[in-house]
Length: 232
Image (cartoon, rainbow, N blue to C red; front, side):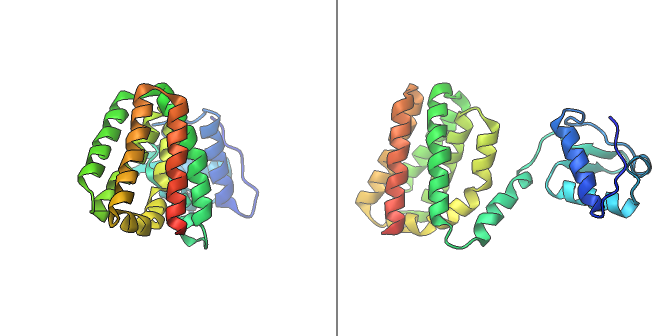
């Protein structure tokens, strides 16, 4: 592990790039301790303030952590803060509903396919628990939203792909916001509420059965139905 002197005006950004590159290349791994502040400032040819600015940014996104009396380490597990800016990006954008609908179609249709292929049992059980909550929450907007969010995040877990789960979980806050009015309309209409539950039941059953085609078809049907409800 060898750092290169920094000669750019945006010094802290160059430090961040070097650390990120070392993580990508496997030179720095989970739990690895970074060199001391004194050693890093010498190797990088930077000031302590620039190094601390870079560390502050990396700590904010959850890539590193400082342990009192021990030093600075690459985090053992990257927390949700690493992807939270995605959620914030959607929240500040205007007229983002259509973009979110299209993003969900891309991610969740493929996720349903992958979930049916792998059917990770623990996450499948979690899906069933949220499906049961959905059935118990007829007419209850708050718990219906909670059940819907949980179901789709559990489905992402069922794929066995951690990146898919983290991506979907990171934008679930904004999805939840734009679905708020839809859920409110849906729970106050008995027929729509039953359709909502039935669609999730079909998605769950197809994944449980390992039927990839049905899982995709049922997810597409649900997302198109949700889109029409949003626009109605």
